[in-house]
Length: 245
Ligand SMILES: Nc1ncnc2c1ncn2[C@@H]1O[C@H](COP(=O)(O)OP(=O)(O)O)[C@@H](O)[C@H]1O
Ligand SMILES: [Mg+2]
Image (cartoon, rainbow, N blue to C red; front, side, top):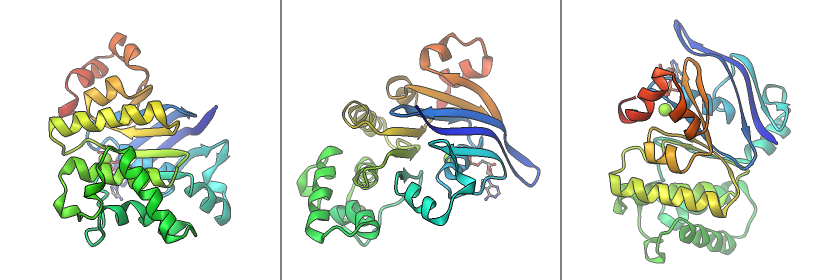
């Protein structure tokens, strides 16, 4: 079952044409990757899907519903099914770890305080962080730990679809490996449709079920084996040199 359908998306900022004729689907339960060089419009694309950026031309459907034609009530309902972790999506510096994890639940649900705390501790555990970090503040955490806390905050909303914008960017190789292991664990244990923007070859090879590579248009749509077999020069370059892409 297709959960997201993007059809003929066109996006330009002045003379800068970012997307041309983008069409692709994301299926339910899939870990789907959005790849492309820097400035290729990956973040803009995901922001359009989660209704933070406007759609200029083309359509985006969520469960076969065109998101441009929704009532406010429907938008609210759909937004509750999304959770996203943006590239520079920071934690609140004035809240400790456990409060950061629960902040969305506090904002968007009517759950009692002690239940929110319980849920938050569950997700702290799910992302592999020990209880002793619960009362620490973001400034006391390593980069990898911050990403985990942000991921726990997104997961705590029990999203139908999770969007992750470069979850390993800025991390050292050790922390990157840990985040990839965590993503793999989440893939195998929670059945959440996930859209990941990434440059990391390890994420691409081990975590993604399928991915697209965008360069204004879609230049590849398939899995890692198909990408390796592709005769497209850019696809090959991308796979051998993703860090510089
Ligand atoms: N609000 C905006 N106004 C003008 N240009 C924008 C805006 N948002 C993004 N862009 C441009 O669109 C292109 C794609 O940006 P982005 O989606 O952030 O790329 P990336 O693939 O690195 O995530 C870039 O050239 C960026 O400068
Ligand atoms: Mg980006």
